[in-house]
Length: 444
Image (cartoon, rainbow, N blue to C red; front, top):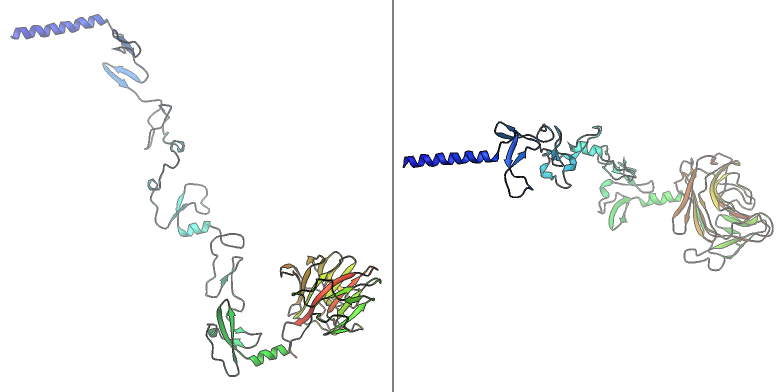
């Protein structure tokens, strides 16, 4: 039995040697096999490809086109070949929307990703609330943004221009017409208990009432020291005296009934000025009397109002307000609006014929109702000239602060004068209302 096994093993070894001999000898650095496209057949020598080598009888495989990247991360491969050393993942290797918030580094609470002011260009950082607000715009008249610093306290309010300001009259008791005061405690929608001699008055504002106690006797007394005159031209025809104003022709002009349809519910009394065939003719309403004597002294707080509708601008000159002229000539002393044939209305101050004219307040058209207001401030240091259309929209305003005739001997008057330099009788202007009032209490 033992003899038989030994003979079988010897036969197997002999067979293997015979097979090796039949393959023939191999060249070094070769493998025995069959090529990929050779089909079924005898064994062939296989050549070692790139990155493969034999060390003795051991087959080795080496790295790719570059050395091992430094750092940590993914190995970067382009076209199946590793890139050079230290080449890791690029931004282009990451698809959009693939890095989630959870993958980002944790942030401290109450911080915002950004870049602080003066930090320069660089990586995003976690900004504190103070750093974040320093980056944002501050609210002003042109920008949305953060509320600016208030300056502290409990009185200041934020204005539309982005600044905090003290309300007008803040910290003072509310007064009525410069007279009796209303205690702050009474502005609580409750009826106060008036002091002796006072009366309760309630003002209503959008459904919420505020109340206060005022001395009506003192209030009426204040009005006694104010003056005012208004002419609404309800009476038709050439009435010589209209209130404080003398109504007279200028060089044979006429004052006649208005054009058809000019009177309406908003303009219940209207008269029309018409020129004659004499140059510089028209009509005037002035407080100067027939001889043009000026008796009004500008002292501050004067207001003049006029509502009018121009019929034609050709050859026209209109002056109204505080004037001392009774003809087509310009005023010597006064504060008034002048409308020439161009329609470009200006405000003018004249002191002893030294005049200062404003820029154009508004350029006026025919067949249009206008309201003009001339206001001398209480200190008599500036005159405001403003024109509105019939809807109350302000068309323009100008202020003039020089040559205000306030000195003794520089008295003026009030009124309205319209003239036509041409020699053809022409309808000039419709006049609805003139008025002169004093808006400050006079001591007398």
